[in-house]
Image (cartoon, rainbow over all chains, first blue to last red; front, side, top):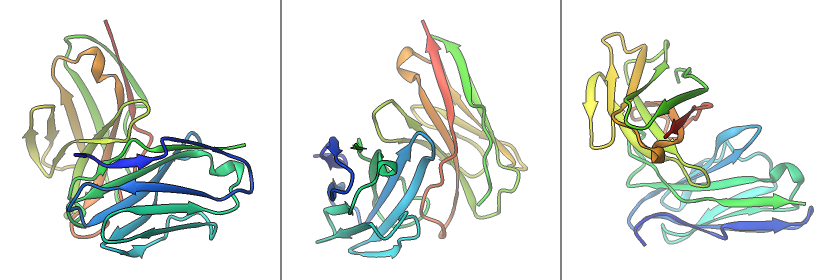
Length: 115
Length: 111
């Protein structure tokens, strides 16, 4: 496709379960970002990939959160032992390069609800 | 990065020009001003970016005065479909790649 895609679009899980969220960036984009948007916190940065490496993981809320990227393409954000406060929309974005002024293109997000 | 301040909400009517002002008093020499738009249930979408004076594209214009401590996003002749949240961001060239979003301005366009 032409844009960033994310799956699933919605995920409902029980507290304590693990979840995996997937992001397919725009083909050829070397930089990939994960953000989280929740009512109480607004839109916040989680992690950034340059190629397959993650130079900045500073936004990950706890060690229950991890992410990987393979083949300079697909990325997976994993949340272990989910908590109710993890409920949010998780947004993925990609950019042509990792220059700060490059436009970031966002996907539609995955809405995670932890019961 | 410079903190941005913008109105929480604005109302307008179809066909009017809408100007959303953002203040960024502590902007640095290497900082650019970038605006994103977000519709409900969608990710943010880039609108426009500028450094100084005026930038115009097919969607909007961005006015930046000489001191660069503020900027104004101008949307000409808005329609109902322009109802969205508009975010003003400061991006430092060759430095911070992560976007730092504030609360944004919720624009409501009425018929």
